[in-house]
Length: 161
Image (cartoon, rainbow, N blue to C red; front, side, top):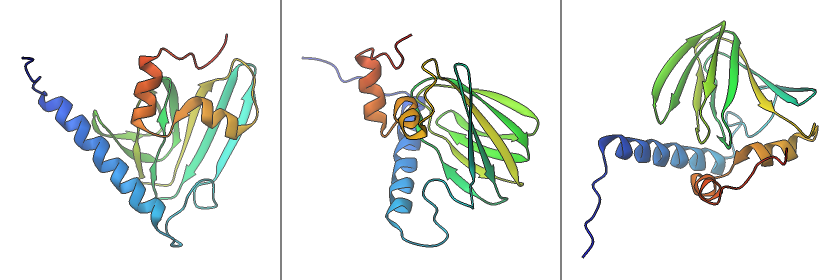
């Protein structure tokens, strides 16, 4: 007879965070209202730029704006160039004031609130120099934690170097 594994309080809090964020995101995505923005918009304008092997994604957020980010397949670095953000992840809630940078873990989903008008920039590897942002989004992010876990369990390569 196998023994049931006990989950640590950290595992429970990670599962709780993930469930709450997914539920909130699903509720917001189901709403058709002017104050709920899905994707690129005037409320959260995105700018994309490229250099050899690098994809840079800049987002501007107005004070009070909230973004639920996607699950990133790889670790990456993001820079807060202007403003003040509160960022919640499964590892806790943190405040950042510009100028600063953060090395974000792979598999992280962030809830970001702008405490001031803010500008932040994500920097991702782009060894194939892809400029189609929809294709890059498919490569760099997962739509669910299950997809992310399956990708890691199968050791799927994201880039063919």
